[in-house]
Image (cartoon, rainbow, N blue to C red; front, side, top):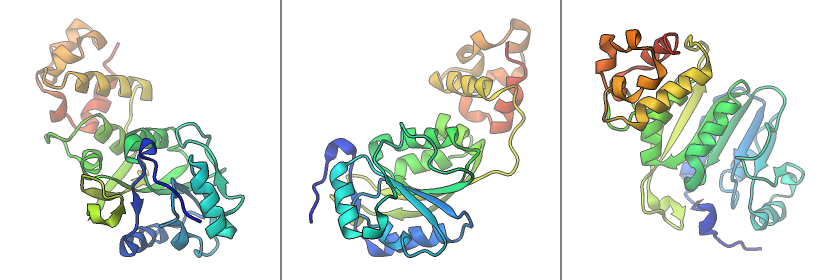
Length: 251
């Protein structure tokens, strides 16, 4: 039984066995007994995940043709596949779980923001991304790639860039380099007035990142606050603790 590639779903299937083994080896270092694979596609990772012992495994796949292929190729996966978009589904488990996947590139950032909705349950995420996206998630203050996604993810997760994956590791080869990153949930989080305030501030600051913080976020603060020296800086010059502290001074 064969399957077709669907560009509309951002599909680039991993075919490099060594890369698959490295990703699953990273999964095995974590102790969660529940695992969700996002977009198993042709089962490149799935075939190495299924033999893992004492693991409650589920996969989410939108493409019905891939589901039929997976169920035919790996009969033990039947009843474990959720036929839905990861962006629309509810958390698949009670309690904590790990997420792994060769994430569809056209929605990979949206998947990470979805993981933030589940952060109380998701302890580890090991994902394949376009290298540029992976670098943005892992970026440090003061760099050009540091932005909204860097801060909102790093506020809750430690980010580790694991390794590059070249285009020839996929079918069809993407036009860009890829990278695998691991996110481990932090044991402590930053004090903020509220998550809503924090997200609003970070988005306002970076939506006009060429402007000083004073000009980009003026509507969020009273005039006597906005005169503070920190507002002379631009968004990429502020650390996560800086943003967190500023939330308490917002209107």
